[in-house]
Image 1: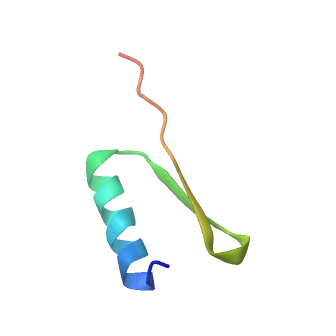
Image 2 (image 1 turned 90 degrees about the horizontal axis):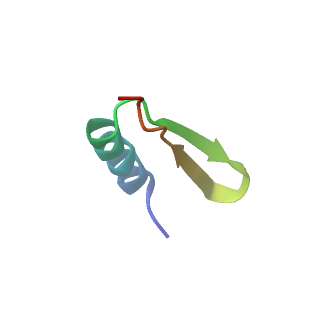
Length: 40
């Protein structure tokens, strides 16, 4: 199981790699990261 620090590091990394990504916390320690490819 990931620690809070590991989750925060993953969120930070995703924010750097995927601008505009949305991070959501769900029930029972479940998380989702949603990113939509920008129109070119």
